[in-house]
Amino acid sequence: MTEQAKKRPEFRNINVFTDLPSYRLPAAGILSILHRVSGMILFLLLPFIMWMFDTSLSSEISYGSFTSVFQGTWGWFAKLVCLALIWGYLHHFCAGVRHLAMDMNHHIVNKEFGKTSALVCFAVSLLLTVVLGAKLFGLF
Image (cartoon, rainbow, N blue to C red; front, side, top):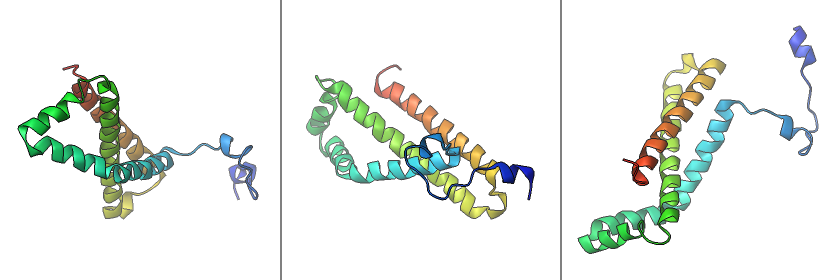
């Protein structure tokens, strides 16, 4: 047994208030939790997404009423909801591609690859969200 293994604390009964706040979840763990959260968000908002898609494609009049929501009094709120949907989709897509890559290449799966691929997934999804959010809010 190595010296480092002897120094690691052993948790037999985990106290939610004293042990969990000091626990540092690795990047791959945070990505996995957010992958599940983004999937749940997309699933719960699926009727809203389908309504938005149907309204935007039905006719020119329904498209006009759909786009007028983003210019109205609550336009900023509608844009924030769409931005959350954009982030949820992009994050779920990037994390899903990461999981597929890990499933296809079992020999490259290790701690370092998990950390690196999780950070790349965070960077790509957030960068794409910022770009699409800038377009949504009319910055370009």
